[in-house]
Image (tube, rainbow, N blue to C red; front, side, top):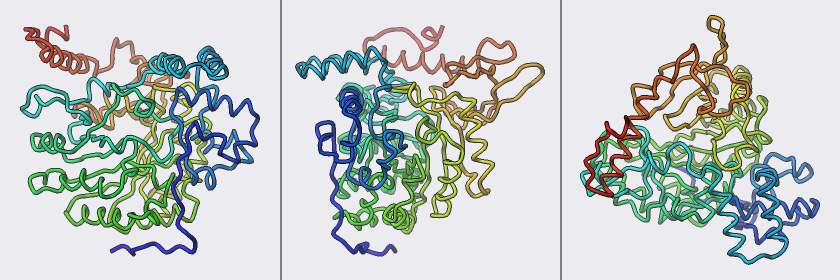
Length: 472
């Protein structure tokens, strides 16, 4: 059992979220030139911005701003927009243009930034037909891989601070027709009862731990029902340990939250706490380490993950420090991701070759206990593709690739090869090696996409089209 009511020698910290309209209230920000602050304000009209007092006071080294990695992680920068887009937005903001005009310009830019990559809004969203229903879309649910369903509770579609590189940025900028969110869990439970192949449910967002425990319990407790025993693992995706560890220590319902974790573990389920740590500094504060210890004490397994991102953690020594410290504190390094092809990707992405070299150097510098981590992995449309290396086969230099997870389970673990391209940053920029016209999974993806078009067509009309005809 966990110790109740974490002791503290001072009054509990109060959570305070600071948004674009609060920039002038962030005292250390005033050390920066006015032009930097104006740039932050401008970009924050397009990309989500929110930071809390803990991040400002405890994690950012203001003597290094704007180059400080946590500052880069949380504060929008001018170069995150194309030059013409920035100048357009800057002029509107500077001239106090009507809010509707600013919002309209921001929408145009947002829609040009690939807001839903990897088939999130088309291929990942199941329908009631899959559960024997009427064919309507199941709001707030994604089912990309056979064993795992993602659930987006509506009250968890915000964060304790926003990461500037977040691939789910459309959730937070008012693009409501592109937002994944479910108001209640009944549809999820119905879907799970019809899909016995699902063993894992990931509660994600946003960050589900922005919710009070009483509300979170309403989403989680139905998953413990006796007729859902095939759901053996519940995952919670969160950055709370990094951005607001007080959530587990001194928040009014911290003990209740940890008791909920214990309840899940006691039910016989595996509780996987998917903790997002982007930089070792997020692990260095006393409160972060105390919070991590309390979560682990409930019986949850804390697994850590983050993308490899330029200006924040694109250094093998940073990953070595982070993985080693995570192991020391009882967490399990899990994934290093490649920055996704969405939002301000050009600001953060690194070439795949460089990502692989950073990962390999870091991986070779830690003990076997930290080598549970996998990467660098691209969460692409067909699945999670890991870069196993760069090699020369015959006379051709190639990327050696492999599916860690895939839309079709028979693709998992199967190696394949792409022509080496030192500039490539994503799977769709790679071409098959050895003179092949397409990767082995291309035909299967056409079939999957055709089936989804067929389902959409069937819902819209009584078309006689078949998945086969749409694939041809």
